[in-house]
Image (cartoon, rainbow, N blue to C red):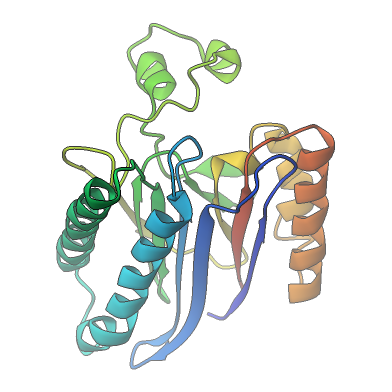
Length: 255
C-alpha cells in the first residue's frame, strides 16, 4: 500500500494568529511505508494557544524519530502505542500547565494523532479535532470530547440542536488546561483506495458532510495536486461563510 499526503492550514478571517499546528510524515520502515500525522488546535479563547499546539507537535515528532523505529522491529502493539502516546499527552499537560502558571496565562490545545501502517490505523484524540475515514461516505472515527457531544450521547440533545448550540465549542478536556487528561484511542483496518482526514473544528462548522465528500471522495483525490486544490477550495468556502476560527486539514490517500 502506498500513500499520498497533504496538509493545509489557514489563519481564517478574524484571528491575528494561527493557533493550529500540524505535521505529517511519510515513513519508510522495516514493515513498509507508514504515515504519521498530528493536528493540534490551540485554544482560541486562551492566551498563547500556538505555543501549546506547537509543543505537543514537537513532542510527538520526537516520538516518531526516537521510539517508532524501535517498535517497528516487531509487530506493532496497540497497547504499547497507547501507553507511549498517553504518557506524552500527560507529560505535555503538566508541562504546558506549569508554563502557563509561570507566565500568568491559561493555554491549551486539542490533539488528534494518527499512525497508518500497511494494515492498521492507530488514532488518539483529546478535545474536538477529528479523524475521518472517507470511502463511500464520511465515517467519523473519533468522538468529540465536548459538552454538546456528551449531551447528545446522554439523549439530552439532538445532533441538530448540538450544531446550533452556543456551547458547541466547550471542551470537556484539553492538553494544558485540564487537571487531568484522558485520551480516547481508536484502532482499525487501513483500507485501500480510502482517504483519511484530520481536521480542526474550524474546518467543519460552516460546510456540510456532503460538500466534504464531494471534494474528498477517493475517486476525485487521485493526485497530490487534486488533494491540495480541493482542500484550498473548501477552506475558502468556509471563509466565505464567515468561519471565524483557524482552519486546518491533513489528508492521506491510500492506493
